[in-house]
Length: 153
Image (tube, rainbow, N blue to C red; front, top):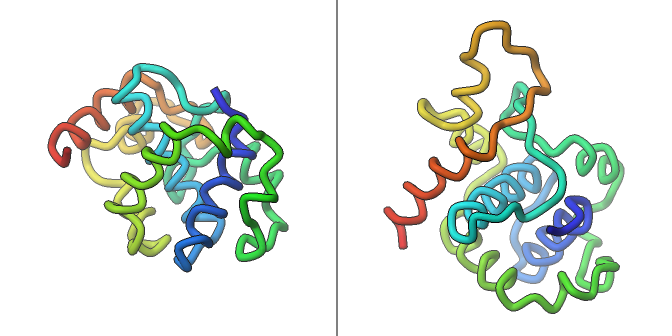
């Protein structure tokens, strides 16, 4: 498992390397997509932090708080301290898959996608006594992304 802040920087560097737009909302949703895809394929969590249900979709709060004032356009691979992460070929393949499917999507589109009926976020927010900030269960994320991964690949 990787540190979610370092992984978010990796996402920013990856997107910047491809001259694609990146901002906090987009990083949060792409981190969630990478997390879900990794969980569906490997059965393991990608990062130590769990996504939570927030009003605009899944959020990794520590990552959000630590990177809130970052200039995402300035992040490159040298900004990442975790050498293992930078050199992990499986992670590079994962990000290529995520970029291929979601690379052109706007933050708004990604946020709407994460709210779809039947999504893990929608499941959590529809529960009785729900409160913002509740963890989205890995079993829900895994089964949801298994359908997406199998359907698309």
